[in-house]
Figure 1 (cartoon, rainbow, N blue to C red):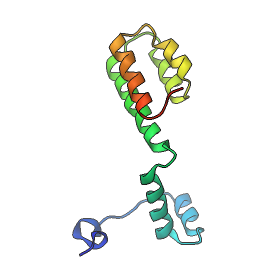
Figure 2: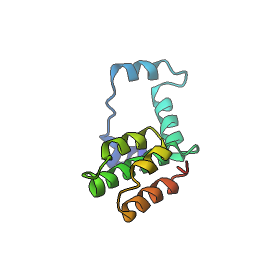
Figure 3: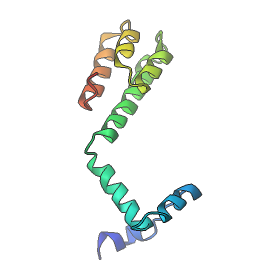
Figure 4: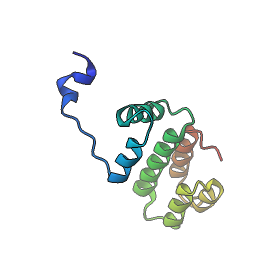
Length: 114
């Protein structure tokens, strides 16, 4: 039995909004092939977009857990998601060193060296 037809995968279904189905139905290769292509592209992450998004999310969780009560927290989160690294560095400058280093490490590991 192949992975696609294994019992583990046989009951899976995809629920999308109507606009998503409309877009998929308009694709020349059809919905299933288009979904497979999107999943393949995302899993390759050639441009690092998904890796950077995951790093930002991990950084946010760290910031929330380690510094959610620190001064400028909300502004720092906005700078993080706006990809404004200089502002983020300025806003977290007064935070404990270990928190700042972890933020830098999370973002640098994903190629976010701005």
